[in-house]
Image 1 (tube, rainbow, N blue to C red):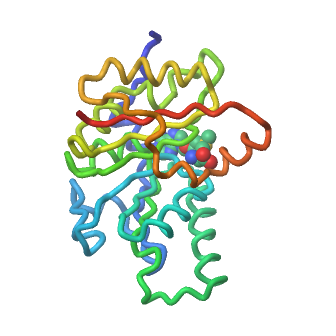
Image 2 (image 1 turned 120 degrees about the vertical axis):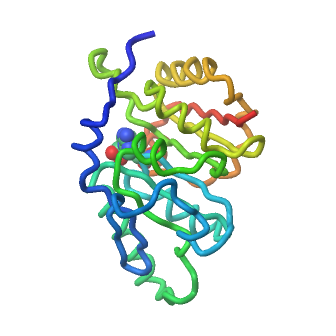
Image 3 (image 1 turned 135 degrees about the horizontal axis):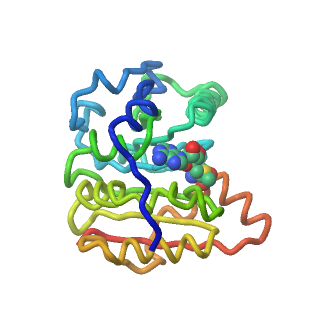
Length: 232
Ligand SMILES: C[S@@+](CC[C@H](N)C(=O)[O-])C[C@H]1O[C@@H](n2cnc3c(N)ncnc32)[C@H](O)[C@@H]1O
């Protein structure tokens, strides 16, 4: 297999100097530098509900629907593109305004947006054995050969962080792509791991919630590839 990307502290300093964690409902954003690591989920959310993380939430469609439908799950969305973080924040605020959601009702108190690089966040801030599920939907496929080293699943730090931070037995990684060749690579890379094992691809209770990319590709009639892994 091709070389892995070289991530180092300098890369992270450049890409994460702006990093923030946001509470949309309360309108608060804290610089990630000021957050102690690893994060205490109970302190962050004020409850002991399970935590799930979406990596690369894009325009935030999945995150909003999931947070609405699963109020007893705490969701962290991680996205490195500021444009999409802001777009998603606005999507939530629009929903709150449109449905006149009472800010004290608890709706969307179960969501935090994290504007940063997911590799950085997962490996520095997420406690071991603390995540019920990772959602990685339509990760950038970087189709050109010279760019494929940027694929997130090619980064062993990313895979190591997922496997160490998922809950043993119940922890799940949901991965979906429209890109067959990348899907094969994801499966190969995960097969090289010792802790993540495939679980029946039908077992994704979130499959009814589509992302923006999924909606677009379904309309185009593209084939969608789905995998679910468990930490065993
Ligand atoms: C192809 S889009 C898919 C967006 C969304 N999941 C969907 O299905 O509509 C991939 C997203 O992942 C984000 N992304 C890529 N690499 C990332 C990283 N290392 N950390 C955080 N976000 C990342 C990109 O900025 C982009 O918004």
